[in-house]
Amino acid sequence: MNELIESLRGTLIVSCQAYPGEPMRHPETMAQMAVAAEIGGASAIRCQGLSDISAIKGRVKIPVIGLWKEGDHGVYITPTLRHARACSMAGADIVAIDATNRPRPDGLSYTDTVKALKDEGILVMADCGSFADAQVAVAAGTDIISTTLAGYTPDRPKTEGPDLELLTEIAREFPDVPLICEGRIHSPEHAAQAMQAGAFAVVVGTAITHPTSITGWFRNAVVAPNK
Image (cartoon, rainbow, N blue to C red; front, side, top):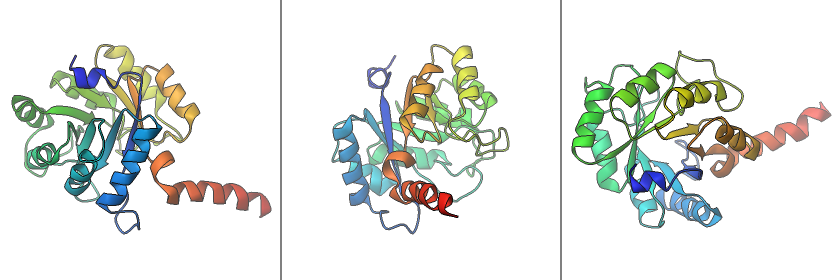
């Protein structure tokens, strides 16, 4: 196994991303967030956009998993080979791409995209939404597979927390492939459950780096009993 990927085994990866229009959506802010996560024990940072990838790569010593979101429906996580190459050139040690079977803007298949990236020595993380996605990703020789899109495509219902059922199914079928649990890990308990279900590592984003959502959780807990 690649040495960089092996370093992620049994660890916490932190996703530092802000949504469009939010006050924290700035490369320097995300870089500061990434450094704080590194100090807290994160093994790697997942981030979005070329400016953020570059800024964070220049500030942390841990690996950077980069992606480029374009659009808001269909395949929008690193949707084309061009996007993936740009993420790598911006400094991403691993490039995360949508691994679903939905049409891609450049007409390439997921497998075609991975082959081109692998030929160039680029490590690839597959953001899967179903077991079928994971099967294709493994067959394509993807370095890391993840449950990032579980519940965000029509293939599976959106679970309250991480999709542990899908995680367990993939882990049993592909025990030798690094499998990352990502998506709706909102507590340390969720993270522990994911590791127990067979995750190689976990990615936590919102619960660590999105204060607007976290504030909303606490507000709802405080306000609801008083209604």
